[in-house]
Length: 361
Ligand code: PMP
Image (cartoon, rainbow, N blue to C red; front, side, top):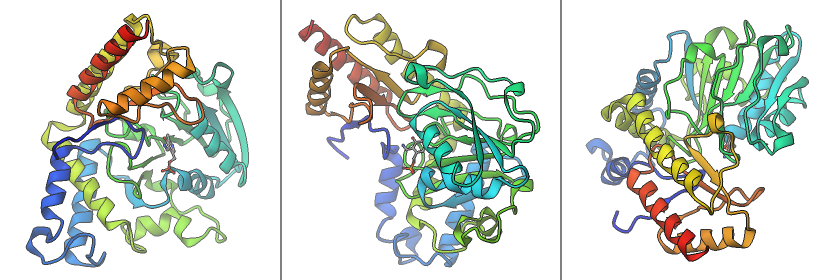
């Protein structure tokens, strides 16, 4: 664990060091059972306990109501772009999407394969630099669901409010913000999140789904893509990502130990505020995102000079500040400061930014 870099990658990204150390210690021989979690049958008593505990801890830290199912699936956020319409287009065949970035666009594009998709609002005209305000009247009354991307990993925005959809189930992609803030789960019909940012290594997708929405997939929907199959088989219909679920469970325990999601959120706010305040006060860097819509997790900024941005990313890497480049589609810089980024990592980044600013006036 010596000489670990501060890794600002948007995902996969840093995990809490105490979790990595626990996993390393338990790696060859989990709890003295004679096997590694990597080698263990998903039907074994040991793994069943790991899975049950992970689910319970997630329920505890997110305060998930009884009438919601929790599933640990594979296929990433991307597979959810298809599973959501395949399961939730159950009456009118209509779904309303709010477009706040590339992932929202991809989700809507996938849903169009299966139903009547309406783009209710979009901030694309301003390069997704803000979150549109949407009212209940903007949605089609008979829409089967409304889909939002709660935190936009590439553009560094986050909803400052939860859209009021009335009785229409609200579906949220929380891949890049899950466990960074307390959420009233009951406001959502379905929440999904790829694990590789705030939860675990890649290969696990968390789905939290209101029970009354389960069971509407058509007979032609492939077995794996039917939420009912996973809900009825407690995430072990087929072989799940056992190791990923185990690490996720360790992260849930870690969050519980430090005081839960509220404590996590407090640290996330402090880290992000420091960085945004510095950027806003600097003469070199600017953040293009509207103040109230700024993400706590993905801090996007530019110098205004593409060559200088590249130099920044390269010099940062040389100083042990890894992956500061913006998404390959937009360039610039992005510091992803997820839950596991220590406050010292943000302090070092700011020190580096000051030095770079002084050298490149
Ligand atoms: N949604 C969001 C908000 C994302 O940030 C990403 C990936 N960074 C995805 C979906 C796609 O996730 P995956 O690679 O797990 O399919």
